[in-house]
Structures are given as C-alpha cells and as structure tokens.
Image (cartoon, rainbow, N blue to C red; front, side):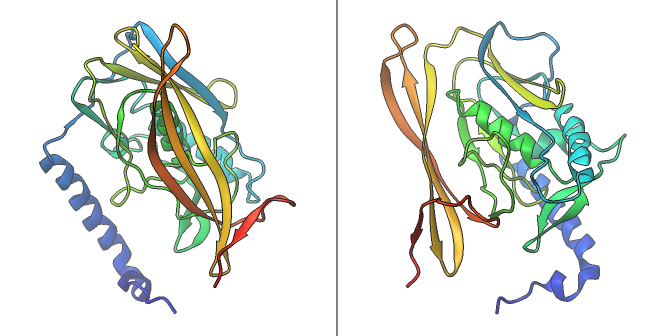
Length: 273
C-alpha cells in the first residue's frame, strides 16, 4: 500500500501546503536568472509559422457536460494573459508566470482535474488543454522546450490532439517552459472562434526552415495490471524550397497511464512478469 502524504492524513493542512508550494515556485523563478517573456502586443509579427485549432467541448468525457463549459470559461481567462505574447531572443515562456493572476478579476469555475488519482471538479480545472495547444504550436518552431510534464493518468481521450502531445500544468508544481534560443522574435496568438480554441505562431523574420513532426506511436503496453501509452516525438527540419528533410531530432519521449477502455482491437503489448 502506498504511503499517504501528510496532507492526506491531515487535510486541513492542504491550503497551507499549496500556499507554501506556490511561494517557493515563483521565488525560484525570480532567482533562476531566466528572462521571462511578458510583453503582449496587439501588433502582429509579419510571418506566419504555424496554426491549428481544436474543439473545446469534449462530449465524450463521461462526466457532467457542465464541466466542459466551465473549462471553456477557464481557458478564455488564461488565454487572455498570453494572447499576443512576444518571445524575444533569449526570453523564456512560462505558462504560470503569465497566467498567475488570470482569475484576479473574474474567478475560474470548477473544471475536471486529476486529484489523488481521481477525476473531480476543481477550481480552474481544464487549463491543460491550453498548455497542450501551446506545446503543439511550439513543436513546429525551433524554440527549445525547457520544461514539460506528461499527465500521470489520461482518463479520457483529448479530442483532436495528437497522442504524445501532452503538457500538464499545476500551479506550484508543474510548468510548461519554452526558451527562444534563436535570433528572431516569435509571437503567440490565441482566440476562440465558434466552439474551438485556436493558436497561431508568428515570427519577426521569414523562417529559414519548415518543421514537420513525426510521432512514433502511440504504442500501448500493460505492466502491473495497468495500461500505458508510449509515444516518441521527433521534429524534422525541412528545406522550404524543396521540402527535403535536412535533420530529424528526438524531442522527448512520453509515457502516460490510460484510465479508460481502449477501442476493441487495439494492440497492447503485455510486459507483466
């Protein structure tokens, strides 16, 4: 049996623990010597790099649909803190540095989130769809992923998002960070046409290369009686005039436990002893 945390034994300590973690979380960022991007601009950079859009309301979650509409509300609050963000050379994007006070004027609503191994409605739940989208956009640029965390458990499919494109965030614990090691500025644009969340990446100069992703997976396996999903994400650098591949690089390997039944016929490797 797994050993319980102190806050599980004494739940009244949880607010204090969260306060402590958040204080240390932001203090560490203030002291880490990174230059975090904070400039929002209504003037768009001239060269489009990549854009995509995904459905916000997931009717296949298996939970009260109200949580999906609450998620849409939360996403719009968080997206407003980074829509138009310019990431200049040498700057670092941090999800939480930007949306730390997204709910200062208008509160978040309860959205679905994984807490102590269970899906439940929590204040501000659902923001991971925004961090997933930002990761998906960034993967099509030469920007450097500094910090990314996969979900521990995926309890229902993410509509439209490719498997392996996964960046969970939890204030005080987990962040998504991306650094601009190039000589050009990049800009993030976010909006919500119809029932979609759309993201775009622009650049200050015409990109020298195009980028194409290759996801090796998903592959499924069982161990300890639980099912896991594995995906390896590669980025290929292409010559924009010929489309010829110049270089391919493994960006990261993602492994997440699956908490929902896989479709019939899905190949699952058995690794149990």
